[in-house]
Length: 333
Image (cartoon, rainbow, N blue to C red; front, side):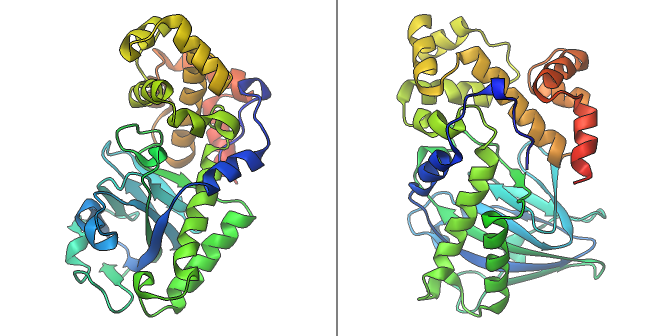
C-alpha cells in the first residue's frame, strides 16, 4: 500500500511481531451486507445508528468496505475523498459517519433508506444508483474495545484505503467476496465459524499492511497505546499533527517533565517525540498522496509544514524523490 519508510526512519523488528500483536486483538464481527451500485450514486452511512443491532451493547463498530467491482470514493468527517478500486479495502476504524459515491455527481441518500431495518433473516443487499456502470461492495463490521479503536485516542485515520498486494490479505479479500456472493443468510445468524472469522482475518491483515510503515509499529506502537502517558501524547500528536509541537508543549499537555516524556518515547517507541511526529507526518502524507486528489501544497499544510518546498525537502529525505513524483509512480502500480 505505502512505500516503506527509509531504514533511518525506524529500526523495525520483524513483521511477525506486528502480526502477533494484531492477532492478539479481541475482535467480534461478521460480514453483514452487499451493495450493488450503479453510476451515478452516493449514499451516506451512520454506523452508530446500527451499532446496537449489529453488536448488542456497542456504541460504535469498525466498518470496512471491500470493493468487489469498479471504483468509488469515501469521505468521512473532513470531507476529503479517498478513492478505492477493485480489490481495495476501505476501513473506518471508529465507525464514523461517511459518504460513498461514484465518479459522476449524485445526490446523497441515507443508507437506512436503502436497507430493510434489522434484524435480518436474509442476507441484506443494497441496490442503488442510476443504472450506469456497476460498482459492487462487500461491507462488514467488527467490534473491539481495544485502545487501537478508541475514538478518543484516534490512533488511526478516520478513514483509510488499503491496496493489498498478492498475499494473505488479497486471499482473505477474495474469500470474503466469494462468501458474500454465495451466502443467503446474514453472518450474525450463521453457525459457520468462517462467516465471522473472515472479517477478522481481513481486518488484521489490512491493519498489518497499514501500520507496517507507521513509526515503531512493529515493536512498540501498539504497546504505546496501552501506556497511559504515551497514549495521551499520541492522542495529541495524532489529533493535531499540523501544530508546531515542541517537547515542552507536549510535556506540559501530558503533565510530565520533558525528561520523563523523552525517556518513555525512547524506551517504548525507540525514538524521540519530535522524530516520532516527523515520521507520523510522513506516514499521513503517504496516505493522502496514495488515495486522495488533494494537492501537494494542501497536504504539506495538513501535516505541519509552512511551505510546499519545506515539505518536499522533508519527503525527499525519506523517500529519495519529490511528493509529486512519488504520487505519479504510485498511480502507475
